[in-house]
Image 1: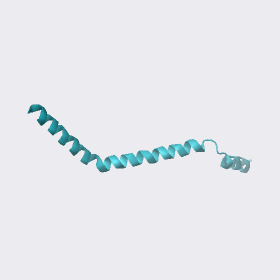
Image 2: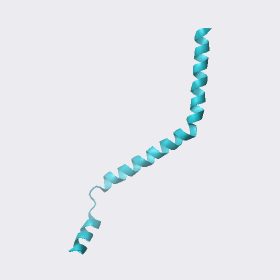
Image 3: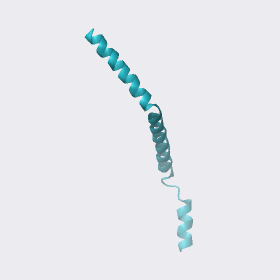
Length: 60
């Protein structure tokens, strides 16, 4: 009885596609997170420089 259940369970492929899509989504999220951590500080400096130039141009 248990052997038959285990055999059916191993051969059952329902939901496999959803799991694969979930793993792909997690991989993409990790890649985006890594990119943000890598360039986050540089991007902040760039935005601050742009904001300072806009503020200086507005005042002058």
